[in-house]
Amino acid sequence: MVQSKTELFEKELTEMADFFKALSHPARLRILQFLSETKTCITGDISDELSLGRTTVNQHLNELKDLGLIKGETEGVKVNYCLNEATIRKVESQLSGFLATLKTCDTGTKNCKI
Amino acid sequence: MVQSKTELFEKELTEMADFFKALSHPARLRILQFLSETKTCITGDISDELSLGRTTVNQHLNELKDLGLIKGETEGVKVNYCLNEATIRKVESQLSGFLATLKTCDTGTKNCKI
DNA sequence: TAATTATGACGTAAATATACGTCAAGTAAT
DNA sequence: ATTACTTGACGTATATTTACGTCATAATTA
Image (cartoon, rainbow over all chains, first blue to last red):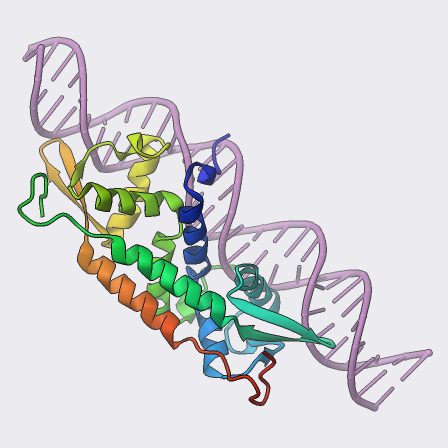
């Protein structure tokens, strides 16, 4: 029992950490950016855009999909990927909310060494 | 040469991803929260607060320090840890800036399957 | 000075993430 | 019907992360 201590933390923190994790790889950021830039639902091989193999990109897509950041709707053989703007807005407010509450002590206060 | 393809992405995306990665673990979020809540510079063992060993916490602290999210100033034997609010604000604006630009296509547009 | 305390450096086992190849199955085109 | 195409499932090698123990070192304290 060396690992997996995440259950020791509050659910909210863990959930937030999961969203940050989804955004912690340049390929996934690029995918989100790409889906947004094209202003369409992209079908099929996004791997042409990134310099990564199809299966790798698919893995990244699934991670984004699992967290609800993108949608992937099957249409025949192909799959249309779109941003899920609802979740993105939720994440945006949750994460910036967290960061916004982080305040340092005021300079001069007891124990404030800044 | 199986990995480390991050150099294939734009520097800006990679830098953002690095910040998000620093925030992708509940222990590190908890540390930031704790440093903020106490409104002081905490000296010494934050591991009392989390249910993690000292060396583990130290590792997390170093990751946060490497990215400039916290400061750790040595004072004798002890070390005072504080939030680095400047960097936190930078990350905050970077994050919301990135997410804010992510827009889906408009419903009804060609290739928009929403 | 000796004991205690605080921290850093180093090593390491287990877990997880990353990148990709291969195969299978379903759909569409010929 | 056969072929080509698109995707998902599975396996896997390598890299990285996580959690921690141990030892070393420097600074206090007794």
